[in-house]
Length: 156
Image (cartoon, rainbow, N blue to C red; front, top):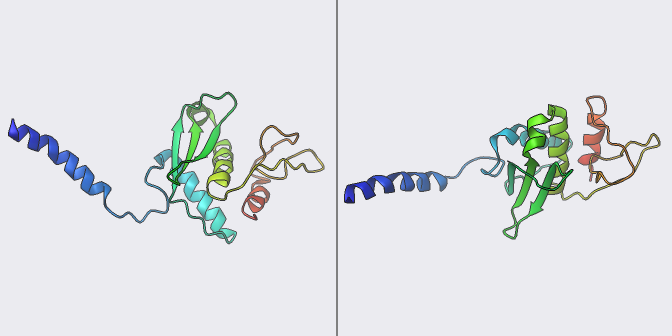
């Protein structure tokens, strides 16, 4: 019986040891690996526009968001960490461009402290990817206008 307790204790101690190791990671270790590409791309895009973005306090998860029409969310926890959540059903059906748009929008909140901006261009399209979805502008995010939207996102 004593041996059994030792065997069960070893994995716990080993995991505890690993969790205390310093990791040279630019993101919180709690970022779902499926989101890592987009988090790294966000940092790279910001850096290319002169922004040094700290994302170490952002937790990123893919979960079931119960609110209809909500594809992503960023909440600040009382601990100071920020919790970025992407809806699982959206994740499973979205294109890479759609995923990038929603994740970058949420990282705009989490990493850049941006608020919603519902300003409209003359053609009725949104001036910012930080639009609320409740405004009167039409969001069109694609390869042709991606750079323009990212310039605006990182300009604040």
